[in-house]
Length: 353
Image 1: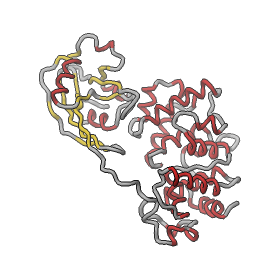
Image 2 (image 1 turned 120 degrees about the vertical axis):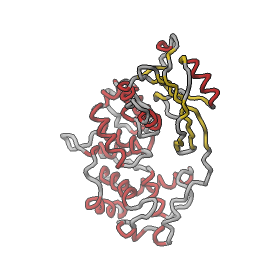
Image 3 (image 1 turned 90 degrees about the horizontal axis):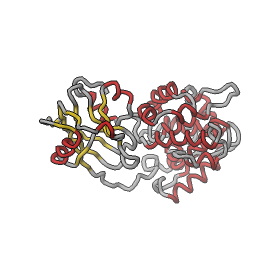
Image 4 (image 1 turned 60 degrees about the horizontal axis):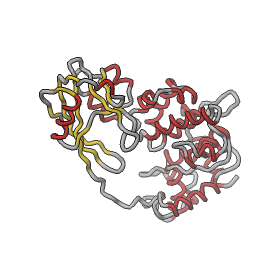
């Protein structure tokens, strides 16, 4: 075994995370590939502490791949709501359906077939095969990139193709042939708990002696940051049309753009447009402007002006539109709603979304 992997595994045995809910093993000692896959998708862009609760609720509701494939999309999105990056949930759902259609209801053990499924790709496929089946495949998630960038003293943003290619070569060279599942977890754990983005615990790192960034006092500079780019601010008006029975009008968002496939409030570019849109959906009398708020995405900020229309009366035919529906509190709780929309509705008297 190479010295890098040996040192990392020795550290993992004493300091790694061994009790994560997706690490439970089957009768033959292997990990459940479905649970490993679900955790890997949830952990993209999200920290372990946040994921654990969502993971446990998700597998309690949909404990197998076949049950995920058979579930309505609204059910999947409702279980995912609050984790963000909702395209992950839609890809997860579609990949499960493809596994039922093409792979006998199981995640394929063939790397190319697994990596070709929606939302998986090279690193996630490697992580699934390594952790569920002990197969030797390298991984390169954000934590691993940070560890390898510092250890080898690699300059340049890790998202650049030339830098990433170099990191893949190192990732492959360090991956051992034995204890691959433990190694995969170990290098992710090291990046998450010791080789952190800020205030790394170099004194506790098993790789510190050979780390170029530590030797050359470059830990704070590596990985090189993405070139700075100011995040733009976009504005929208969200319409809260509420009828005499307390039902709220929701619209399903399209497959593209932000919050794809989720149910949300109707939106307009400005107040005048909001009134015109409101009249298309309901008979209305007056509106109340609620406190605006800003929701931050990875690439821009969204400033939302909520406009509440109380006592709205649905126009004829709205129930025939599959992309629009009037929902009471019970229905709202079962639908996939964007987190800021759910919070907005929860703050309205008489609604529990």
